[in-house]
Length: 313
Image (cartoon, rainbow, N blue to C red; front, top):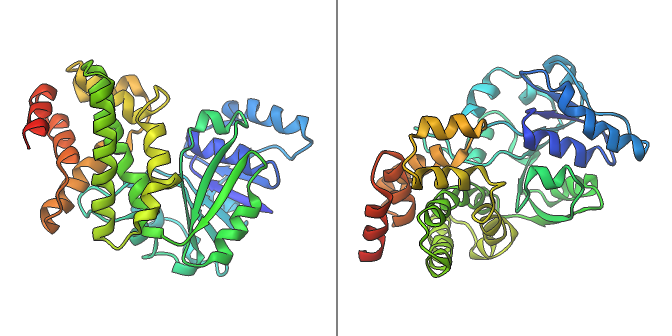
């Protein structure tokens, strides 16, 4: 299959490598990522697979299968500037995780303004880009309203990725977005040296909070107990490979957010997502104490004061 991936960040490149085990891959990126593709292509050469190439947006639209790995906060603007919605019969896999700041729109709501609902599939589950690019085994979920579409993407996955087909689109994307916020809280917890008891309590209550929020919007509880929910949360909240976890560590050290992001050098979706969740929760009357405190800390509140507020609630 000829597949175009929009987004040349770490996740986009990792997906290019994974899908390149069985397919011909092109990447559309705003910056030159050719040097970053060299090690991935060397690995593909050993398996006699076509190299991943960087192409123009116009060239990328010549494919019939597309993967979107763009920051959620830039997604709406990107859709308005592309003709992807005009491609009849195109299969689209969205690998972006987050909630749009300001509007509070979920990824599916943004995408369905531009694409037919039946053409869209969403990727979720525990998956660090670095490990995927090393061919290390992982399991992921493909959420779609049309099981045939999800199964088609499942068939494109390499042998080191175990795909599960799911129909809970809203649950999958809420789990993928919200876990980044809890990962920031986990980084704060570890950065303050609060101990393993506190960390376990935080993650378990965080999973309850994610489930409560998701069920309000019609998601299935089972989704949050599986790979898309608990699996992705446990991964993201426990490793220095997690950008959002590292944001939490920085906040615990009272570093300015600007400095944290400068040191990170990458997007941490949980920062904007925490604000979006807090706004949605206030509007809809949903109880989200951890997300609320994370947003408060990002806004300048003392992490220790937030800890005391959570203990006293």
